[in-house]
Image 1 (spheres, rainbow, N blue to C red):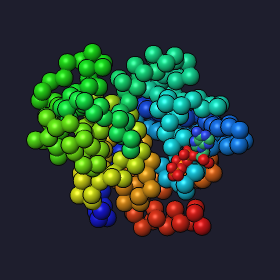
Image 2 (tube, rainbow, N blue to C red; image 1 turned 180 degrees about the horizontal axis):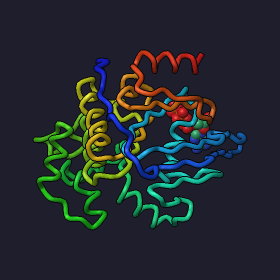
Image 3 (cartoon, rainbow, N blue to C red; image 1 turned 180 degrees about the vertical axis):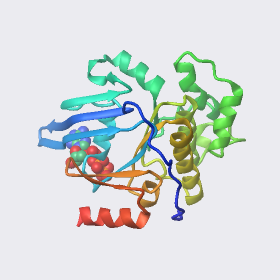
Length: 255
Ligand SMILES: Nc1ncnc2c1ncn2[C@@H]1O[C@H](COP(=O)(O)OP(=O)(O)OP(=O)(O)O)[C@@H](O)[C@H]1O
């Protein structure tokens, strides 16, 4: 991946935050003992913002993403997405909210092996009762560079191509918040730039919000803000930073 400088929106959009984490803690308990993965994180993700979350291994990044997306419950604290408090929802309501308003780009692709690429991408719309328009599906497949692969099944694609199907599937519903966990981990540099550019465009043009966990300073530089987690706590942030500045801040944290 090259360190091409991304462009940023000139003004922050007004309005209430897309996502609010209020004093989130998460303690995992097992026979081996308790682990405090998050120790009190409060943060507002503005609508239309692109935020990268970085930190040393074990600092709580994935836990933060899982709690923010309602895939796991914080031990204490509140998550509010577009004005809705997740704690107050039952599983059915949470699933509905996720399908309607969240897009997931996680490393475990969760593609359905028996469906074609086209049907995997169209699935989220079908699940929300919407009829996928052929043009819409083709458009997102083109956006991720998979035009011509619509009839293949996931097993007939490379890891990077499967990841792009997962991204197309997240784009199709135009979610208000994207949660991405190492979205470019399996991709070559050209495709990575393309995917990060798509996420950047989603925030700049469509006012969507992106929260992305990554270890890659070049990927993180596509975000206007990088949040650093250390030992379950926010340890600072960098705005509009270069990959070199981000890498330096990471080595300080890991030091
Ligand atoms: N299900 C679990 N049960 C017990 N401990 C857990 C569980 N999941 C995570 N942890 C612990 O919580 C802490 C935070 O983990 P988390 O996966 O959120 O970190 P991370 O910053 O995403 O790490 P990495 O960069 O290595 O993926 C770690 O100490 C981890 O071992």
